[in-house]
Image (cartoon, rainbow, N blue to C red; front, side, top):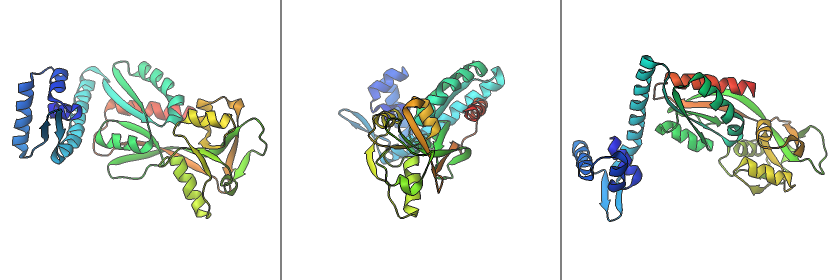
Length: 290
């Protein structure tokens, strides 16, 4: 199964044989044996390599998850024998990675010296899919859609603010939601959690946001806001992590208040290892401090 997954991912028996350090005839023979055992064609040989069939795509999705479980089983057995070992993959949104990546790595190395850490930055929907298929062990996501495949735990609620450049601005410390609808906004494209929350809240008032520029990175949004191209809708932690506080003015959105909730997402189908449990505790401790 491991050999099949690597061949399917690389799209080439030749490249897979080199990476796996196994002779290509032996690799081909094992793939054929797997197809015979399953009674289905998994790969189609082409002049430029191989491509997966529909059955092969199903096998690839399940194979990754199964191999992930086997890896975690080995890690858990190793933990019992030698202490906390293994690797844990954590995903987080750009608005949090700047604030959490360094302190999490520092605490991880201090408390879990024999374990390995992989940090990934991404959008919520893509990270949830990675948790389901086993590429991520843990993801921090905003406003996720419930799923039987996921174990979702709320961690923190972040009020949303209108963020504008400090130069030439005036006004109070808060702003009403109807007034936000009148502002030229610089916000991420759908299905960003903040944008979807804004659109849903304004729709309840019969309004729509005035989206002037779409930018999918926090630094890019703040650069444009700083130069006076428009306003952003962000939690305070995003501004403090990426920007110079003196360069921006924040107004809390009120009447009604807007907020996004951060959740911890883990697979509901796979057991949690000791390393993962320790990383969860570290992440929650760092979020409390933040």
